[in-house]
Length: 596
Image (tube, rainbow, N blue to C red; front, top):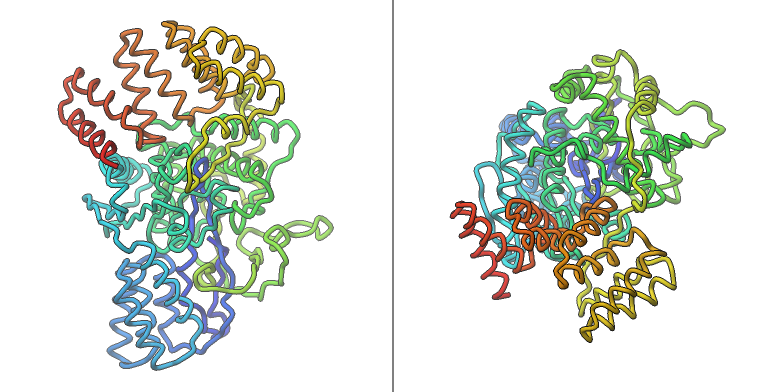
């Protein structure tokens, strides 16, 4: 999401329909990003009441927008603006065909209006992105998906409905309408609907986004090795609740911090909210005092320079959210949202943003410019040209200060200082071998898993030994292969591929206890690697520990649910545990995957 501004100050009611458009909260597999906009390129005089409808759209309050629009249409019928606003409402409701019809009507009355032209183009792209999709309905969600992703629906429904219950209690917000969720099997469709590029997906891990009054995410089958797709869905739902709960007035750092901190709450897990790589980065930043300032997280975390900075920013924001809840109590985050929503709007202030050559340059004050402006007054960045699809230009400034003053009695700068002081006393575990997460989209052609494993090894000697071990393993020379893998591990002691190769051979030679030791080390480095859980589950089954094996197979499901073996083993273990309903679900999933 981009920083919003009061667009109608001084009677400039010209502002964009897009007020709502870029309330975008993107979700990397490891964390999740927002994208905030700037003023649209065109200023057109709009009739009285237009801005009021746009303001409701910006906060996704469609019921209020429809009520206001109905009154305006009755008072001054036939205006092009009413058709344009109606098209906008229909788009946010997911009714793409009807939206295009109303936008066409608006353009017939006022040809060439760039706001509506851009919006219509994006609606057409959104319509094309979900062409042929099926819809799976739950009590509180509508999940649009390709037929190839039908196997995901039982698990995604369960995770989202659990999020609805648990996070609704946590934050005190519940949507009045079913929430639209779109799951994409490939990055090109995802790009059309979300506006996220392949570079942002692979380079910054942005695999989900909350934008346009809906949640959009990539299928785990679109990535080479899956990702925590259920946590991502819940993460994006947190963003959705924050928009509703604060009328879209929450700054990026708090948005992302709360979403990261709460993304595992749906499965009753919240203490380990940081990935080991994120915890490592946070510990290093604490030691060197090299943090990403909260204000620099605007307009979006994906515009930070490197994946390391992106993940550090998520870690900082999540730690800050945890600090708020610890200080404010169980309802501390809900109190933050309530204070932000109920705060009186700051006086309208609007300045045209300066041109910037890059997201890095845009909006970041130079060191010699002195203190940074207050959070609510920061001039937003401008990238390329203003677009209704990418940018949001209207509404009150985002600021967490009303909530910070209520809980801590300080402004943003004071809170950031208190948080850093508290962080010095917190226990951080910079685990040896922890790495910044990287994500790769699945290639269209054959996948060479061994080549992908070799790429991540830094040592040329370790690569040679792993390659030799692979050849020996293929010819059945298990002991010799194990020797080569073990030698390679001396140079790369925390390599997931090597640890898993060793564990696999130990399982094949009847050594489950040794395999578990190697897998445990792999999981300490990266708990989001599905292969580690597969080997862990197999080891527990060899040890006749069905309960532990069941948990490990379920972890695989949360990362890569497209492996038939996972569903077969879950079916057997659920049957053994007496859960016939889940056993049947897993048998059906296994059959569906085998038919693909």
